[in-house]
Amino acid sequence: MVSEEVREVIGRKRTMEILELLVSGGKMNYSEIEKTVNSSSDTISEALKLLCEHGLIRRVEQSPRNVQYEPTERGREFLTVVESIDKILNE
Image 1 (cartoon, rainbow, N blue to C red):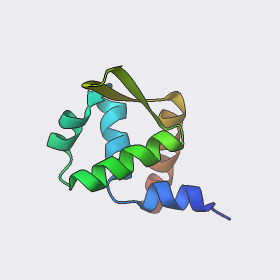
Image 2: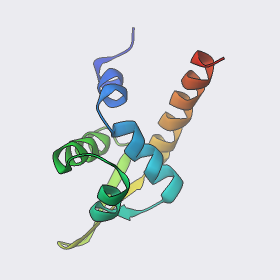
Image 3: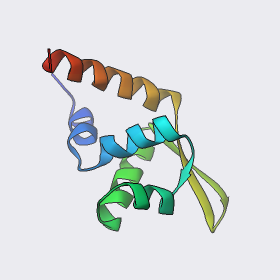
Image 4: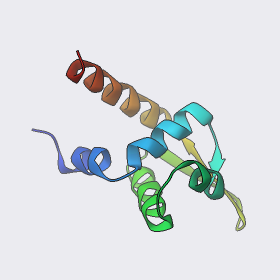
């Protein structure tokens, strides 16, 4: 049975898009993410919070005005598994 946590991360709007963005682009601040992801600020904030809560990304605060997000190794592994599932479904 797939856990509710997995369903929440995969099913939440823009969460996987943001994880893919950070894995491919490295560290990014909120405004860079917001410029790239076509969604509301609330949706982006909720997705970032969820990804942090599950240890898939890390919030790095250099100063109160300089906060960046970066993928964790766990986040990279998670994305690899999801991409494998995607490949299975598209074969």
